[in-house]
Length: 260
Image 1 (cartoon, rainbow, N blue to C red):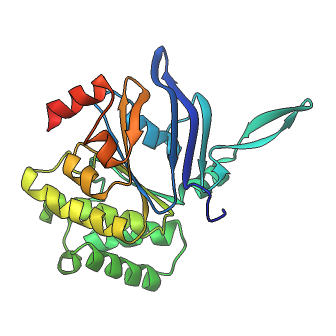
Image 2 (image 1 turned 135 degrees about the vertical axis):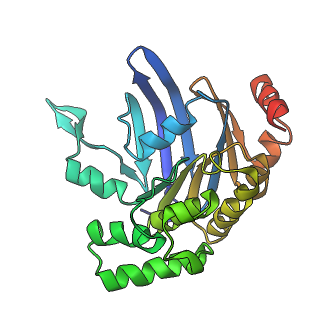
């Protein structure tokens, strides 16, 4: 990957679930080190875009590149013509390991402490020693403000604390890209700020992030690019000042009026 290679480049992305055409030709470029916030009503396809990037869903058509590498497929030639060939499961797992993803639900192991939740995948997937994985986990729990909760189980943590553990767990895999799928939507309002604070710190550190959220204040403050989606397409995109401060499309104006 060269210095000017985008971290994410999506071209004409389509996704169908049976007869339901969820994504209808999405194009998106996310430069390395930038924060892209994706807004839109429920059912607009925002989360599906993230799941396609992370290969949790197979795309129906189009191309997704992360760090210049085609995701899910390799390019080749069949009968003298350019063709795509599905990557092996092992190669897809390698690609997916470059991407961290944080979901609405925290998906922590309930029988493991916060520390062990952050250690586990490092040992199992990255094959780190227990000692190195524990040191990294302790460092990350400190980073997300939970050093004093490392021995607590998920049931002993608030929703905001559990989500911060989930972020630490994703960061422990040393991702090049972080995807956030409405990470505060399952939280009580008073807990939202602590999770957004961690995400602000991540953005300031230069982590490339794509964030699906309804937190307009976060988008205005942190995003380099705001994308508004509706009905499976990108309706409008630009800087926060452009999309949030001076939207051009009626659909964007209507959405912002409903959430502001």
